Amino acid sequence: MNRLNFSLPEFTRIIWSSTKARATWKPRIDAINNVWPEIERATVSTQMRPGGLQSIAPENLLTFQANCFNAHMQYAIVGREGTSPVYGNASQPVQDDKPWHYRVYFGTDPKTFLQEWAEGNQLRIGDFLGYPRCCSEFFQSCWVNDGWRDLTYPMMRNSQNNGPYTCNILLRHIGVRPVFHLPCSFNCDSTGHIGEEIIECACQMGFDIEMSWLKNILSWPIRWSSMHGVAIITTPVVKIITSSDALEGRVDLDRPGNSYPEEGASGNEFPFSQVPMSLLEGIRDTWTDNGFGSFSAMRKAHGLVLRTISTIYLDSGRIIDLGCGNGILLERIHKEHPHLIPYGVEYESGAYSRARERIGEEIWFYDLYDTDKYLQENFQIAIISLNRFKEIDEEKSEIFLKHLRNHVNFLVVYSYEDWKPDLDNLLSHHFHMVGVETNEDSEVRIFRPRS
Image: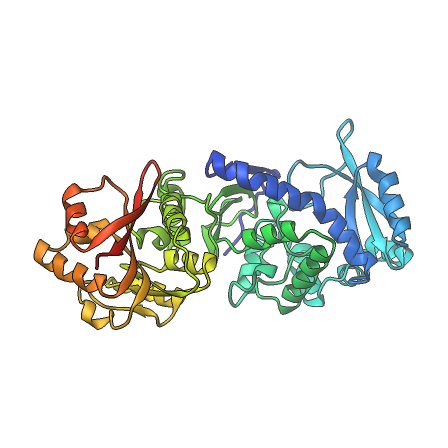
């Protein structure tokens, strides 16, 4: 992809997907940013790497100096730079009457580092800072020699795959990154190893909560899209719009995720039209597989079912979800009640495949009403939607319920709409109600078999 011959000024804009997303994740991101400088210094004081670079406000220089003395670290001021409220692709020049910071090196042999810094020897500078040599060579080639201002696109060209979260620097503009350098690719083995060491060091310092947030964020699905000098980084909770190299055409980088925040984009909080569909592929199935219009609606409804199951006191046993969708409810039940062994029945092929990936071979691909095929043994609890009884006639319902009565100790029936009296009468022929839980949207009832 060719670059155009112009460059936009440095800028970064942040857009949150909802007020709830901002209220939840901005304080967590701020907390990560607050501890990151301390982690940087600790990786040097513990000799994980030879040295580090930080920007220090003039009023904080004495405190920084005391920290270095207490950690037996030498330091040297390498220059001054202008400040920016957000991450920039390059250092800002010092301007009269505007805030500025010291650029400070701390660690091994500051005198020699100053010489290498003055000469612009990027390979030796990288060695002093503990950067992988492959990443320093990449920086020299792309940033210094070729003049790229944003190395994301060169990294993408240099990558074979999306790599581990410890190579994910796409969210560096909001301060969320796993390493202190720009990797040569998204699957750089050396960077991945260093990222794990940094996170382990931070956890040993007592920042395990901040690091759990960091790992969660870096595991979200992300799209980086760039054209004509503007890059847009889209995540489930925040969109970042920032300056980049002016590419003549549009370039998209999709990084799949293996986690999705509860506060993330949903049909209610953030219109899907504003999120690239490739970002939601495999994610939107999370709730649509289970018949919901948004992730938050599913979590709320499933939470009521979980609360109901918690009222049934069992030491062990098997639980079966009759129409389990993609198995997310069973997965949550097993996490909260590991003594309950999860089973499920699902007849929609896509949801069935995803449930098998989550739960395993205990998910069966049967018609829900062919009970002879899967109700061979007894279950402590069976879960079913009240709507399932609307799909069959009364005669078939009687046969289905009779078979259930003979093989389950508790029947948990949930409804996300008004409870139908005629269906209640149908259930009462074979079961009697022993408990009920409700919220403003749903109702869940517990039944025991009639003798």
